[in-house]
Length: 426
Image 1 (cartoon, rainbow, N blue to C red):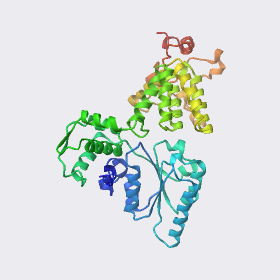
Image 2: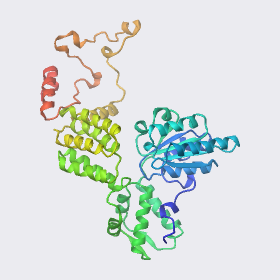
Image 3: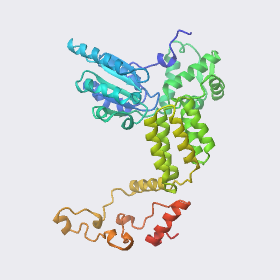
Image 4: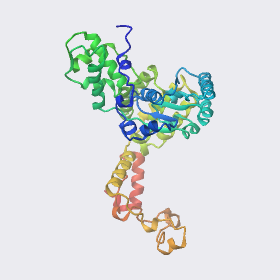
């Protein structure tokens, strides 16, 4: 059995019709499927979580279009490797053969110089680039390359998608189809997969090989008993990744610097991308601290910038400083709740008209019909304030921002009470 390819590799789909999930991209009539079927394929970035089929989709595209497939991993490839692929592509063009697809896994790990080395080949059409990333490409891919590529977002696989893969494996895999294996419970399988199809099939195979029975009934206890003994303590592409980042964020939100720095250390030792950690701190600084301590966002932003400049391993010190500060800070989610309520209100009430006094009046006609006519310029009044309504008429008097119960926001509340009286006298 040692020489048999892993189940995830054996079950890798060979066509779009066998491909699981992403129907918004590759279903009948979907945007990417139309591009593939027309042969007019753009360079693209496939953005989505681990195990949703980015690599597989790129390979299927190359096979369907009968184009050579060159694959590089950003982890172990450099500018030299990119140039070698481009030279091969140039030779193919000279012989009028089909131009290749260049697939770059984890393109977010490519440096600026590595990404720059791709530009010329993409611009000249020597290769069609397909980059795969788990990170937001607007942060990680240079703007020149991003502007020459379409970004397609791959969604996490649903429970139905994942269980379909399991049943297909049990029915179609040449090594499992002859066995009597049934799924009694699937919660543990799904939870341990973290939505990752490859990990799901790895877990299934691990359980089947560990138990070695035929017939076999797979239930939650059987899965947990066997998988927890055999899986790594930290898998940055799997369930532990999501569990540990969750524990990390909740420790900071709960004002425990000890728990926060412990989970930070777990991520560091597990090889987590420091920029991923720093970005989460940026979000937390606004979501969980906000105006209770505006310095939190400044520090988190400086931490993010410093991590990008300093690199590893020294960045761990900067992250530790930011983490312990944010964990120790006073907390408020008032700003987060305000935007949530505002968005819910917009969805509920639709496109309400802007009040006339708040409208811009760049032409005489607009002035004549009252645009901006009764607007009161705040700085022309004492204290740079004059009460007037800034919401649509149907929402007049609505309060969306409710300052938190902390010293900094109490000062904001007192000022708002002084200015707006009834709206904040409660």
